[in-house]
Image 1 (tube, one colour):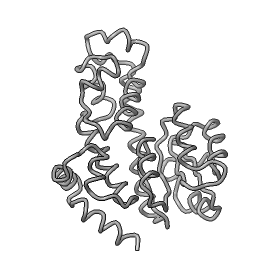
Image 2 (cartoon, one colour; image 1 turned 60 degrees about the vertical axis):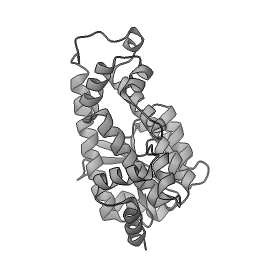
Image 3 (spheres, helix red, strand yellow; image 1 turned 45 degrees about the vertical axis):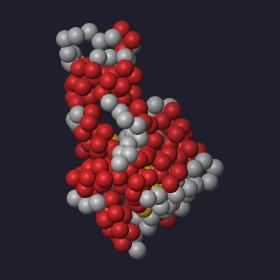
Length: 261
């Protein structure tokens, strides 16, 4: 079973998260409840959770500091952020730290359950692929000696971290390949086999998720948000966003605002 860690300084919310959601039915086990980032860090060190639901604002150590520390320790856990914040900097940092998704308070437990089920399937599929490809040679060509020290999983993890922290720039395959010290062809095959998407598909998806996060959790205008996620022309950003979501950024923000009223 997948392991879940729940982190929130409000006891009623923590209790609801652990008891309202059908964890066992979803193929997961709650391995710890924490009231602060410090407590959560101790539990994460002990159990290495696959999924973390974490509040932003907590005493002793806040959510973003906690996430930063577990990322530094190498945790690849998928993270859902529980947030009532509407500030741009919190959203910006959450994106950089690779937060998977967010749930605004007050929590809609039905929506949260669906999201957790989806991410559970993603984690299982990713693990199955990693297990398979770790035993199979991906290509005939020998990788750059600088990259031999890293496993395929480590190379992909480095690529995903680089994308998350540089998505506002003009990223390309050549840049990522050079960063990893491998050939472009090796990078493309490695990335597609492990992630299930091409580099461009994944980058676009991450940018769209980041844009949706910022549209809900910041008061920055559409052009500023587009620029932050790598689209420096508002018209093009709107076109890509509409293709991905079926609505313009303005429509998405309006709809999200109505849903939280």
